[in-house]
Amino acid sequence: MSQPSRSKLAQAILDATGQDAARCYQCGKCTAGCPMAAFMDIAPNQVLRLVQLGTDSASRRLLASAAIWNCLGCLTCARRCPKQLDLAAVMDRLRELACQSGTVPGAQRNVLAFHRAFLASVRSHGRMNELPLVRRYKLSTRDLFSDIKLAPGMFFRGKLPLRPHKIAGRAEIRRIFDACQHGASTGSVEGEAVEPRQPASSPGAGRRRQTRGGRR
Amino acid sequence: MIIGYYPGCSLSGGGIELDLSVKALVGVAGVTLREIDDWNCCGASAAHSTNHDLSVALPYRVLSLAEEQGLEQVVAPCAACFSRLKGTHLRLERSDELARKMADIVGRSYNRTVRVLSLTDFVRLLLAGGLADKLTHKLTGLKVAAYYGCLLSRLPQCTVAEDDIEDAERPTSMDAAIRATGAEPIEWNFATECCGGGLSLSKTDAVVRLSGAILADAKDAGAAAVVTGCPMCHSNLDMRQGAIHAAGLGGSPDALPILYLSELLGLAAGVPPEQLGLNRHFTDAMRLTRGAADEARSAPAAAGGGGS
Image (cartoon, rainbow over all chains, first blue to last red; front, side):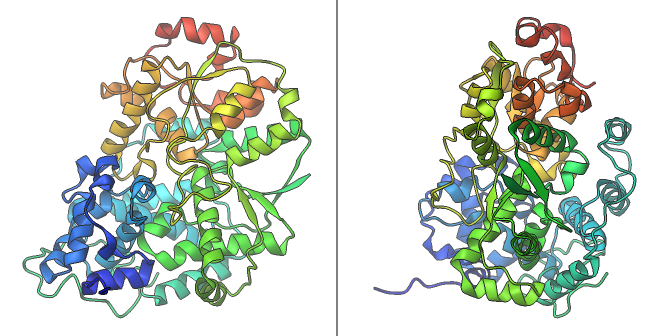
């Protein structure tokens, strides 16, 4: 029996997630069931194929793709995969790598901005609070007016508390965040607007790693 | 019986009806909930989408606190919180290496003893423990779509069915609970489809399309209400229902009430609808209580275009 040969990218994903892309035999079941496939520039099964190939150009395409930012993490693919691969976990890791290499496309910035606003609220309060989350998200995306009509309705239904809930162990939470940043997760773009980088004009993007974690 | 309670962040905000109705139900069932002291956010999609370690470390702290506070079972009514807590517990059970790493990052121990319950697990427990006999206000004739969504039946890194996790393609726990209220769970096609979940703010167009398809299929199948166990599903289907109809999606423009499973059970137990939070919905759910189920079923056209 020969070992399956793995690309560097596939090996890195295996190390980080336990998911071995080399096992995929391209049945396409993940794409068939994916509710967001229609919104993706690279179909889910092709994402795995590019991980298998793992060439510089395959990596660049993946890390600058819209596909990885359209994955909802609904786990339909993971549950149906005949090889029991968790593609959603692979997508998570590809998003982390895209953050680190600074290749998040401009059109996908809102997704990252939302996640960051969410985590900023958790980092400072220990909990997600909707008002600070939405305020930070709207300021960072300059998308001030969408959904604004829902706010009074939420408020009067008791769904938008004005005072944030804070936990006692906030210092502990901040320490956890810091420890996880050192684990080379979210990269140096933390807290900043992410500049889209054209894959073609970015020599060696994709595989580049930032050495320092972000700060806030 | 004392059960640990992990409300999660949504339940004091957008998902407040879930908190109210769960608390009303335990009152009826004679069960005591003990909230985990100083619990933190599970990290939700934001953590697992951008920082793997953090997505395990945040639930780890919650599980560790629960264990330290002597809670053997913890209910996480929010499907997303459940998925993160249970998924983390399962990962830790399988990997001593991960357990050591997390103990190091979080600075707490966790001996992997806490059993995390979803809303459907919890309801099953309550029904078996005597709640079924207290559902005396039967919702006979009410046709309901049991909407499981993604996270009640599909867990991260759990591609093989576990003993206590139901079939992801054909879940039945919610249908059984609906039958216990006297209502009728309908056959439909979108029971386990995704509503768009955490992309609600950042990719609203896509979410409106996915959620619209769910509403349309429920209506086609004759549902007078959709029942869910997830605050994200609820806000996408309830709060955004007006926008979905305005976009010409969601089937007929008739408003379709979206209830938490615990609200439906509370109604059948005779709990006042305001106590359950039914008056807080964006899409009128109170009409289910007026003239009971029949009115909602026979005169949906009068309700108009969604919203409040």
